Image (cartoon, rainbow, N blue to C red; front, top):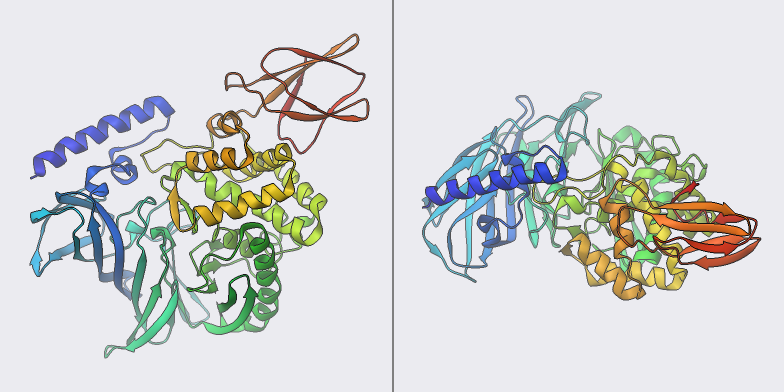
Length: 543
């Protein structure tokens, strides 16, 4: 090479990054482009089939050392590929067929050159050996990294890296578009504590140096940021949930002093969550790998089949109701929200984090559906409408593509209200439920784009929701209904960023329920009162 080709590619990404800044007014860097570009020829040339991650954790020095085996299928002929590892971590060697490969590093991107061309459809593997001090999280899980702490006199370790990136602590193709079909994790920790990771525990190996290695295997495709280390002197208890696909194993790992509290708290909300979500979304996606809740020193994270839990065994969000309605205090927010991501986020995963609304909007709305299942439709609607007080309308929900950047945090509360608005338009709860189940069935264990999801909804409902999605997702403003009182009634029209926006609207005119079809042109309707159904998340501007 190839070095010349890499340099040319780097300059191309730099140009794309600059263009992205101008187009989206987001500050991005070359490092962002190297990480976020899912169409790079050095990434698309290979499809990851399997990882075997081996990591030994030195708690005293807060360092890690290990390796990762990449097994992959070539999607075309190539000689160079890219994987990712934060530049503060040292790569000792990359081994392919017993030989060390040449590699170069640009920020957190690593380009590996093979001695001969890798042929399309061939299955190959290489192993990356590395070590160093990973980023330490200052405020997990929001800034991400390793957490090294103690409870009582025992060490307590946890990882959280959504957004930050799994390559902050282990080498991988760090993007959501390519999930390994399975992964084997061999995590070595001091023998005084145990490690709990994703999937099923296959074996525990005692080492001669006072360490134990815990071998965990995940049988389903998994996103890299979901791969997790959780280690302390956990106590373990378990249960069974009789679900749509048979017996689902429920395994709980908590601090010893919380065991009795956890038994009651988890038993109640986990089974209620599964009842509601299997009703709305279909079977829990990972029966083979089971369901786990693992107590962590931070609030929570949707680690696949190994949910991180730190809500202190309280109802609500650390004892608070985010909706202000009271309904949020009847269940544990972390159990319901993070487990909801098993369907939207882990089962269905977006290729680019710019489309993270697919994960967060549906999961935030899942909270309302949980309430509806257990307390009725009126209660569920009250909850999601109450969340509107948290909406900022500060910037678009969809982020810039190709630079590893998500959009506004409004993807949660605004996204949930967008979906609630769509459901109100559909006005068919049977179809709405079939749609949610269909998404999780037809996109099961796949990576998708936001457009894939929108097209699917359009197809199943036979309604063109694309302009509505565009307004809520691509612009910071919500739809505005301009309303004028006339002598004999009202004039109304949509004033939106999307041209020819024409979302139908249910209103109450003189105590009669009517369905209007406003457009960007003024229309008139007789009447002395005009009220919009509160389930639509819109603004009304009286002129």
